[in-house]
Length: 208
Image 1 (cartoon, rainbow, N blue to C red):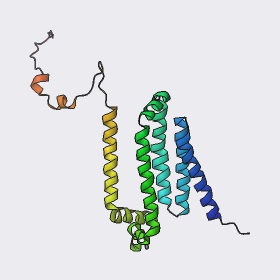
Image 2: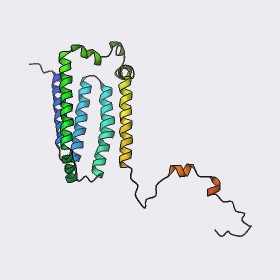
Image 3: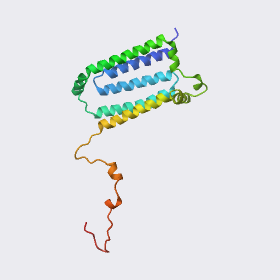
Image 4: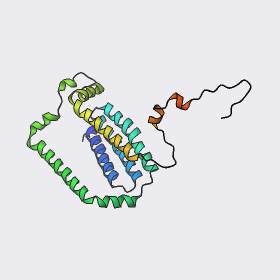
């Protein structure tokens, strides 16, 4: 009996990744959820290695595991999350969440049926083979990303920019008694308003 190591590795990485993703959303402890998420990222990197996409695998480990997931872990550990308040806020939006979830499930079903009913839909997501012929893994990915998927790449960057601005606005708080840097006041300052030139006599001090 011949064992296909590629298929065995695929099922192992896939099973571990699905199990880790399920534990990420089902764990009651937020720290444990982030740790399960890191494990899911590692298994996804293993799948990329099986697809001979080593650059994507290393990018996933370095960027997502080394930066994003660790940042999540530090944020979760630093924030004192009140689980009771979170559950109460979730119950308030339960109806809205059910409606949005139903819409997402309906969209996923329509997409799955579209792939089955209209086989030409595959052409919409396939790239020309000329982008990959005779090129390394990193070069082929760059050609595909900045040519065939240039507009989605720019849109994703815009979405991340909006998310970053939203996070800054939501966490920006003005507390009393805390000195804050005022950029406008610093830029608009004039030398004559802040500097004073005094003629100090020799061997004498100045009373300010």
